[in-house]
Amino acid sequence: MIVAGNWKMYAGPDPAAVAARVGAIGGVDKIVCPPYTGLASCVAAGLATYAQNVHWENEGAYTGEISPRMLLDLGVAGSLVGHSERRQYFGETDAGVARRAKAALEAGLSVIACVGETQEQRDAGDTETVLRIQVDAIGDACGSHERLVLAYEPVWAIGTGLTATPEMVEEAHALIKSLLDVPVLYGGSVKPDNAEVLMGQPSVDGALVGGASLDVESFAAICEAAAR
Ligand code: PGA
Image (tube, rainbow, N blue to C red; front, side, top):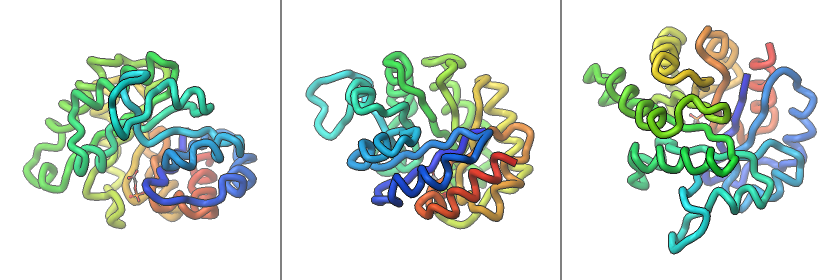
């Protein structure tokens, strides 16, 4: 089981407090994804630390980007790629996401690559097609790499308090695993009170948690649910 906390563009909790609270929870890999400016202090606190994005080159004229080597030099273990907010607000494409994931894996980072349909796509009956296109782009570039994890995050469930039903989650995860044989996390309004049932689905290997990871106690409660 893996529980990753995506702090997005929030300062987040005190890394030492997170480490002290979740450190002893066994049987689950606990990861934090702070903004770039918080990476060093999370690493220093002994947390498994991922960036929220990573470029494909190790250096170059790419204003505003951070390279795999820069992250490794900081002691960062991995990165998210393809989060729906990157796709929605910053124009990231399936091809770019695949390129970022491949380069990060080749450099030695672990990767959590995010996929998921919008409400419009679900309503139109296009969920399966969308997931196939997104997963195949990543799979064609990376294969089932041992440091690659996918996250299924239905866009309509992110930050909305709407959660996919356990049946919807299981169906999507089973499809994703049939396309690419890697662990798959669920993300989208995971909270302490729904974490256990969502992570109890057979094809769910953990959670990618946004809002609830900003509070040490609720993040710890989700890690404890994963451990059970
Ligand atoms: P949420 O965010 O838990 O706040 O819905 C999840 C994510 O975007 O990774």
